[in-house]
Image (cartoon, rainbow, N blue to C red; front, top):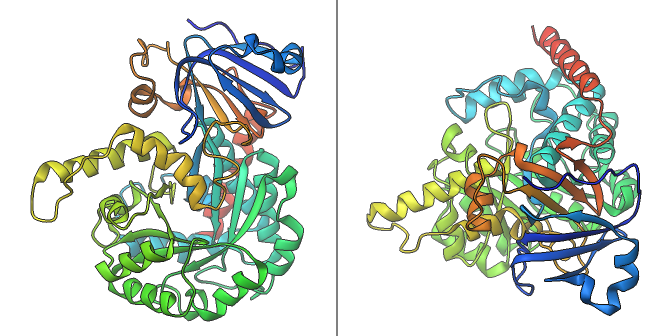
Length: 459
């Protein structure tokens, strides 16, 4: 078994040297290492190499570093979740057999969402962020579409900050029910107050829907919301992108100068060839939710991985709604891999000619996810100069041993329980298999109390 991780309280330091692990860099410039070291200082990756203790120029940092014996472990980039409705977490798996999109809309968005107070937003978002960290997700886009008041928004953002995750708050008004009508006007305050806060780990985006089919024109992306985002210099995440109406909307955005690298299209199922061409030509990014699309039945029900790749887009991956789905990235990678390869094996007209690989889906879950959110220069891979968002995974657990292929083991064999450490900005947020600084008993009480209050209000 791997050597125990050192005690953090005995030697608090901003410098770590992880030695002798199988290093998956996820980088296009820095190769993977069958056995190597990663040096972290002051929140950033300083060096990656086979034996950094032999490099004289690093002697000073190595001398002050906390040595972490990574033999028998995998060192990997943290996962990036490009789209999750975090406020719903205390209602997890409450509709596990959801039949279609409208049953989700009517139960969760029309009935349950209006019952949320700012405190419930805080509890749900905090639970989602902490469980994301526990399962190796170091960056989370919270598509917070229950911003009923400024207080609801502030509570959701505070939860991200408190968790220590690299959080992206995508703010959107609620679909249904009473609210303060403060959105999108309140975004100026939100950006001014929170953009780059929490040590640079928090950022803000505009959330919107593709069309007016679900909740009316006020939430549909177009010239008005595009002007808001451009005026505030923030990215846009657009949900419910599927079908003919969304295809027509995409062509309108392209014509009006509203489509580009700062715009992320979520789901993107059942789109026309012309829409995909516009997306690829203009550099739009795509967030796939591999379990959501088939389980909830979004348009074609098939994650649009082949369409994205054909358009020259390498997508990010996302969780979507935990009320009906799994909340970890391992499930997303495996589901996408299985569905794409199943389609390739079908050999029907239009089926993909190439099968994606475990390296591909890991890339989607890390570096491409970061690029999807406009954070590719900061995170998504382990290479000098990037922030130290990384995982330490036990490769000698009973479900992982023996280690024959590091990427194959991580993608196909690992689970949250195999993740021994999670660092975000070089700060340990999970260590020796436990979330750092969180009273789990108190968290259980808060989550269950919030759920029970919501259920009583909904009736």
